[in-house]
Length: 470
Image (cartoon, rainbow, N blue to C red; front, side):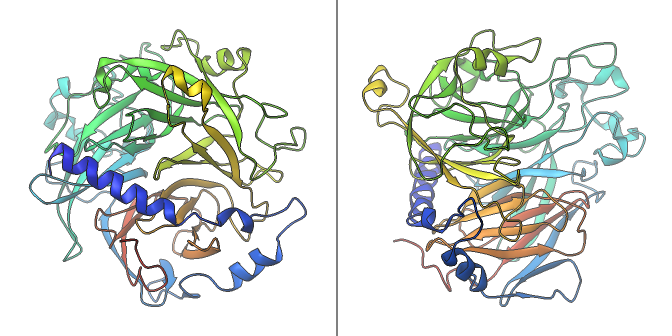
């Protein structure tokens, strides 16, 4: 589709998704444990109880089914192999009408067996070295990057798949843009040395239209740090970013030209204007950040964004930026940003935050009507949710959360505000779930079983309990 049509679809789905969050906060846990409302929610999940999978891989509610659409080691159409450790993903409709799923791969340079080039990197000869961000002096190239999967949704099968970004390290999450591209993030801050040719810790952009390897251009003004995820406000073009550190920050990038990130911009960090403290983690020695209270925020400028010492967060601390516990998944819905902090909370099992941008976001006028941050949910109960990581919003409302834990579940929050277990990884209980996202039509949900190298496409009666908005 055209860029303008892609943007309209992005806004429409974001608007529909946000409707499902009305009333969610009243079902969050109190410090002492579950509320009665939450116990009821867990006993009556939106789609009914899970049905045991006869294949022993992934349990789902009645009426839902999955296809394994991609496996680690399968041959791809470019002569390479499907890499392992699939992570963040998003879907797009291309101008030719085909659907593409763009998938990250969280692989380090020494993990040859997980890469796309064979157990000894023997398929590197098929690659044009100038298409690599970091060729690793021909010995230890960056093995992360992205693959693009052209998918026939009607027949639930892959049409083709191929490498679309090469030479990066530990591409963890990222986020879709309203102009039809995927921002992929390096969760790594290694410097160039006698092994690596380039510094790492950057974001890269992969257009949905790419039919092969894109030229890897680091978006350096967005900062060099331990990136995790991003999301984009289609109204302003501002990009919000999480940092996967136990003492990480939340950043925003205000581009010089919305939709043209390579032209640079200004990096800032979130500072809570009127909270009792700047530490949001609520760990044993950092308690006191309340749930469901909206605090005004300001955004402070970050300098020296290439950060050779990987110290942007320390610069932010010195300027009063708020501290978060391993910011991970992030998604945008109707002028609201949702993000997960994997080990935040009183039992360090996760938090979900919501940020509502100012109507004047990114302009001098925002000081008169600042954006608001709230701790949206902190379950503090492992039967509800543990170590929430990647997340997405459904086209008709509600949230889907991946767990990064043993015996991981795919956890849902309904439009009525009820937590439920939507899916369970029974085949590979030692592997986290990653990359949850919906197709542009909303008919298919995709998720990775990361360590097993599997990508699943899930279909079923999504609208049975939740009718999409008009």
